Image (cartoon, rainbow, N blue to C red; front, side, top):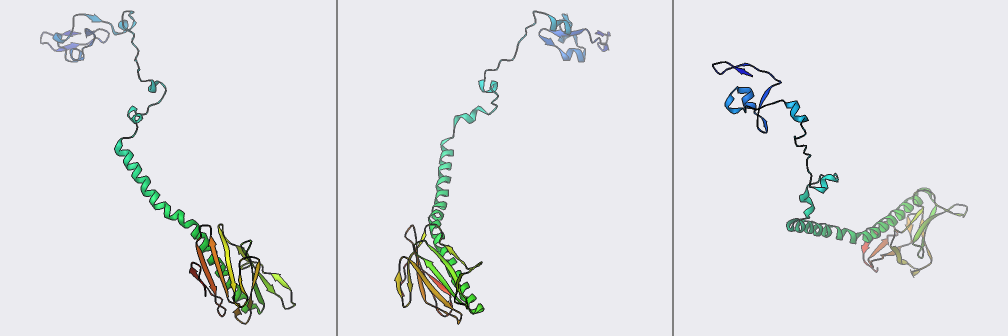
Length: 236
């Protein structure tokens, strides 16, 4: 690199660059100020081939980095006391919200069984009036089931097909007792309720109970076929 008497940069040779000890002085190269440059010249390519040039490799002391785990090390320190308190608080809130619902699972089966039985009785009551045939609802108190039958004009008793044919009480629900007006109360065996086409059936009181001991009472009205549901074991 050459300079004029005025100190301005007049020529530049890329193969000969003035270096400061330990590295390139870009200010000397770009500004042409000699006071920033060393008198020692060095060929850049030659320096990289010099055996005295230190060949240093980056040293990595983090074993997690070598293993490919780039997760921040601070996360391995665990949770703080405040974070643990927040987690315990959330667990307590969710437990408080879920426990009442878990307690109602059995109650839900009890209510659903009562509503299904009420719907079946009303359907059979209407079918008896429409078809002019006597319908019968047979309760199996031991098995927890009920089924519908039709008394044909020929005198044959055949099972009802399709809707209203009967069902089984849901899990955990059983017949505790059944009272047929004029015939007494029963806790086992098969009991039949007659539904006449004239719009009348034998008054029936059904007591249901679940595994938790909760009870519901259904009272089936004889003139309408509507079943009212009462909580607990109710006597009429």
